[in-house]
Length: 196
Figure 1: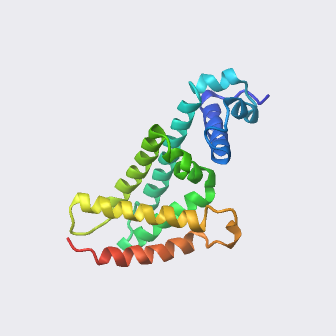
Figure 2: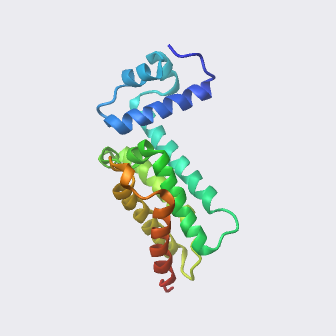
Figure 3: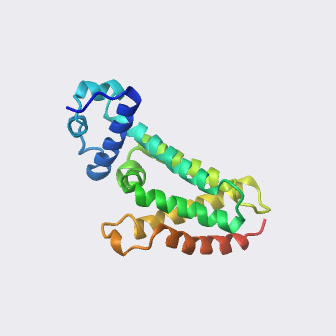
Protein backbone atom coordinates (compact mmCIF):
# COMPACT_ATOMS: atom_id res chain seq x y z
CA UNK A 1 0.00 0.00 0.00
CA UNK A 2 1.34 3.46 -0.87
CA UNK A 3 1.86 6.26 1.62
CA UNK A 4 -0.92 8.69 2.38
CA UNK A 5 -0.78 11.70 0.05
CA UNK A 6 -2.73 14.96 0.17
CA UNK A 7 -5.91 14.68 -1.92
CA UNK A 8 -4.65 16.77 -4.85
CA UNK A 9 -1.35 14.86 -5.07
CA UNK A 10 -3.20 11.56 -4.89
CA UNK A 11 -5.60 12.67 -7.63
CA UNK A 12 -2.66 13.72 -9.83
CA UNK A 13 -0.94 10.38 -9.21
CA UNK A 14 -4.10 8.47 -10.10
CA UNK A 15 -4.59 10.50 -13.29
CA UNK A 16 -0.99 9.86 -14.39
CA UNK A 17 -1.21 6.12 -13.70
CA UNK A 18 -4.62 5.82 -15.35
CA UNK A 19 -3.38 7.75 -18.41
CA UNK A 20 -0.56 5.26 -18.94
CA UNK A 21 -2.78 2.21 -18.42
CA UNK A 22 -5.57 3.46 -20.68
CA UNK A 23 -3.05 4.43 -23.37
CA UNK A 24 -1.47 0.97 -23.19
CA UNK A 25 -4.59 -1.22 -22.86
CA UNK A 26 -7.43 0.93 -24.14
CA UNK A 27 -10.58 1.99 -22.36
CA UNK A 28 -12.51 -1.28 -22.50
CA UNK A 29 -9.61 -3.52 -21.47
CA UNK A 30 -8.76 -1.40 -18.43
CA UNK A 31 -10.52 -2.02 -15.13
CA UNK A 32 -10.65 0.26 -12.12
CA UNK A 33 -9.14 -2.68 -10.19
CA UNK A 34 -6.06 -2.47 -12.44
CA UNK A 35 -5.62 1.24 -11.82
CA UNK A 36 -6.07 0.87 -8.06
CA UNK A 37 -3.61 -2.04 -7.88
CA UNK A 38 -0.89 -0.27 -9.87
CA UNK A 39 -1.42 2.94 -7.88
CA UNK A 40 -1.16 0.97 -4.64
CA UNK A 41 -4.54 2.15 -3.37
CA UNK A 42 -7.81 0.45 -2.61
CA UNK A 43 -10.75 0.73 -4.98
CA UNK A 44 -12.67 2.87 -2.46
CA UNK A 45 -9.79 5.37 -2.53
CA UNK A 46 -9.96 5.45 -6.32
CA UNK A 47 -13.73 5.97 -6.16
CA UNK A 48 -13.27 8.85 -3.73
CA UNK A 49 -11.64 10.73 -6.60
CA UNK A 50 -13.58 9.47 -9.62
CA UNK A 51 -17.21 8.30 -9.77
CA UNK A 52 -16.50 5.59 -12.34
CA UNK A 53 -14.15 4.54 -15.12
CA UNK A 54 -15.92 6.68 -17.71
CA UNK A 55 -15.71 9.82 -15.55
CA UNK A 56 -12.00 9.14 -14.99
CA UNK A 57 -11.37 8.74 -18.72
CA UNK A 58 -13.26 11.93 -19.58
CA UNK A 59 -11.28 13.85 -16.97
CA UNK A 60 -8.08 12.43 -18.42
CA UNK A 61 -8.97 13.69 -21.89
CA UNK A 62 -9.61 17.15 -20.48
CA UNK A 63 -6.41 17.02 -18.45
CA UNK A 64 -4.27 16.04 -21.44
CA UNK A 65 -5.89 18.77 -23.51
CA UNK A 66 -5.11 21.36 -20.83
CA UNK A 67 -1.49 20.21 -20.63
CA UNK A 68 -1.10 20.46 -24.40
CA UNK A 69 -2.68 23.91 -24.44
CA UNK A 70 -0.38 25.08 -21.66
CA UNK A 71 2.67 23.79 -23.54
CA UNK A 72 1.59 25.61 -26.70
CA UNK A 73 0.62 28.89 -25.08
CA UNK A 74 3.84 29.02 -23.03
CA UNK A 75 5.97 28.43 -26.12
CA UNK A 76 4.35 30.97 -28.39
CA UNK A 77 3.96 33.78 -25.88
CA UNK A 78 6.53 36.51 -25.71
CA UNK A 79 8.27 38.67 -28.24
CA UNK A 80 8.82 36.33 -31.21
CA UNK A 81 8.73 36.95 -34.93
CA UNK A 82 5.96 35.24 -36.87
CA UNK A 83 8.30 32.57 -38.21
CA UNK A 84 9.81 31.95 -34.75
CA UNK A 85 6.30 31.62 -33.29
CA UNK A 86 5.38 28.97 -35.87
CA UNK A 87 8.57 27.02 -35.17
CA UNK A 88 8.25 27.34 -31.39
CA UNK A 89 4.63 26.20 -31.56
CA UNK A 90 5.57 23.08 -33.49
CA UNK A 91 8.55 22.43 -31.20
CA UNK A 92 6.34 22.71 -28.10
CA UNK A 93 3.85 20.28 -29.62
CA UNK A 94 6.52 17.74 -30.57
CA UNK A 95 8.27 18.07 -27.20
CA UNK A 96 4.93 17.43 -25.51
CA UNK A 97 4.30 14.32 -27.62
CA UNK A 98 7.85 13.02 -27.12
CA UNK A 99 7.70 13.55 -23.35
CA UNK A 100 4.11 12.26 -23.07
CA UNK A 101 3.54 9.49 -25.62
CA UNK A 102 0.76 8.01 -23.48
CA UNK A 103 -1.05 11.35 -23.49
CA UNK A 104 -0.76 11.51 -27.29
CA UNK A 105 -2.09 7.95 -27.69
CA UNK A 106 -4.93 8.69 -25.29
CA UNK A 107 -6.03 11.89 -27.05
CA UNK A 108 -5.65 10.60 -30.60
CA UNK A 109 -6.41 6.90 -30.15
CA UNK A 110 -9.07 5.07 -32.12
CA UNK A 111 -11.12 4.29 -29.01
CA UNK A 112 -11.65 8.01 -28.44
CA UNK A 113 -13.07 8.50 -31.92
CA UNK A 114 -15.52 5.60 -31.53
CA UNK A 115 -17.33 7.01 -28.50
CA UNK A 116 -19.35 10.22 -28.92
CA UNK A 117 -18.61 11.55 -25.41
CA UNK A 118 -14.90 10.78 -25.68
CA UNK A 119 -14.74 12.26 -29.18
CA UNK A 120 -16.41 15.45 -27.96
CA UNK A 121 -13.79 15.92 -25.23
CA UNK A 122 -10.91 15.14 -27.60
CA UNK A 123 -12.28 17.52 -30.22
CA UNK A 124 -12.63 20.23 -27.58
CA UNK A 125 -8.93 19.83 -26.77
CA UNK A 126 -8.03 20.17 -30.46
CA UNK A 127 -10.39 23.12 -30.89
CA UNK A 128 -8.76 24.89 -27.95
CA UNK A 129 -5.29 24.26 -29.37
CA UNK A 130 -6.39 25.57 -32.78
CA UNK A 131 -7.96 28.63 -31.19
CA UNK A 132 -4.72 29.40 -29.37
CA UNK A 133 -2.72 28.97 -32.58
CA UNK A 134 -5.17 31.10 -34.58
CA UNK A 135 -4.41 34.08 -32.33
CA UNK A 136 -0.82 33.93 -33.53
CA UNK A 137 -1.57 33.88 -37.25
CA UNK A 138 -1.02 37.43 -38.46
CA UNK A 139 -2.71 37.52 -41.83
CA UNK A 140 -5.29 39.85 -43.38
CA UNK A 141 -8.08 37.26 -43.13
CA UNK A 142 -11.21 36.96 -41.02
CA UNK A 143 -11.31 34.97 -37.78
CA UNK A 144 -13.02 31.96 -39.35
CA UNK A 145 -10.35 31.71 -42.05
CA UNK A 146 -7.61 32.09 -39.41
CA UNK A 147 -9.18 29.29 -37.33
CA UNK A 148 -9.36 27.04 -40.39
CA UNK A 149 -5.63 27.60 -41.01
CA UNK A 150 -4.91 26.85 -37.34
CA UNK A 151 -6.80 23.54 -37.58
CA UNK A 152 -4.71 22.67 -40.64
CA UNK A 153 -1.55 23.32 -38.61
CA UNK A 154 -2.84 21.12 -35.77
CA UNK A 155 -3.60 18.40 -38.32
CA UNK A 156 -0.08 18.60 -39.73
CA UNK A 157 1.39 18.25 -36.26
CA UNK A 158 -0.86 15.31 -35.37
CA UNK A 159 -0.12 13.41 -38.57
CA UNK A 160 3.61 14.03 -38.25
CA UNK A 161 3.54 12.88 -34.64
CA UNK A 162 1.81 9.65 -35.61
CA UNK A 163 4.38 8.95 -38.29
CA UNK A 164 7.59 10.31 -36.80
CA UNK A 165 7.26 10.22 -33.03
CA UNK A 166 4.53 8.00 -31.69
CA UNK A 167 5.49 4.70 -33.34
CA UNK A 168 7.27 1.86 -31.57
CA UNK A 169 10.75 2.50 -33.01
CA UNK A 170 11.39 6.01 -31.70
CA UNK A 171 15.22 5.83 -31.81
CA UNK A 172 15.33 6.47 -35.55
CA UNK A 173 13.03 9.49 -35.47
CA UNK A 174 14.10 13.10 -35.76
CA UNK A 175 14.01 15.07 -32.52
CA UNK A 176 11.30 17.61 -31.70
CA UNK A 177 13.35 20.61 -32.80
CA UNK A 178 14.25 19.03 -36.13
CA UNK A 179 10.63 18.12 -36.83
CA UNK A 180 9.51 21.60 -35.79
CA UNK A 181 12.01 23.24 -38.14
CA UNK A 182 10.89 21.12 -41.09
CA UNK A 183 7.16 21.63 -40.53
CA UNK A 184 7.55 25.29 -39.64
CA UNK A 185 9.16 25.88 -43.02
CA UNK A 186 6.24 24.22 -44.80
CA UNK A 187 3.64 26.01 -42.67
CA UNK A 188 5.36 29.39 -42.81
CA UNK A 189 5.69 29.49 -46.58
CA UNK A 190 2.18 28.09 -46.93
CA UNK A 191 0.77 30.81 -44.66
CA UNK A 192 2.71 33.50 -46.51
CA UNK A 193 0.86 32.49 -49.68
CA UNK A 194 -2.60 32.89 -48.15
CA UNK A 195 -4.64 35.76 -49.56
CA UNK A 196 -7.61 37.31 -47.78
